Image: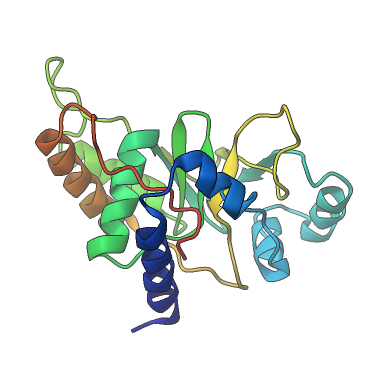
Length: 215
């Protein structure tokens, strides 16, 4: 069992113990843990490597830790964006039956999964082959793939200031080389997420998990 798997199972056990608590009580007890900050210095440097001048980027981030990040895709990571609820279904499948996920963020009504460089082109091709999109009567959740030549808009390194947007890191990057999923893994998660969505078409009572403490 890998270290990340062990840590996730411990986190899941803590979640099971608290799942019956009212949400407000959990938030008071847990403080600000629901939104993670990127505190791992190696993780911050890894993000900065996506830019042409990592050292200058680090200086800017140090002076403006609450500013949203805009990073080029295609070298350090690609980005796959999914509708929030469907993205959470994908992540749940990745943890329950797959290898887990890499760095993960929430921005507006989208879930952002950082993926291996080259994933965007390959996953887009696989989705076309699968005729992803469905029919007008039965559309599939839109997955947006961002690769070389695209800019990723990501949450700030620090938690948002009061009154700011709710964009947040759910799984911040850690280490000098975080594990990133590839196109085949994400396609599998999307297929599985669709099957679950079909089984539970009326989102009432759906298993929507806060994955902020899963690693």
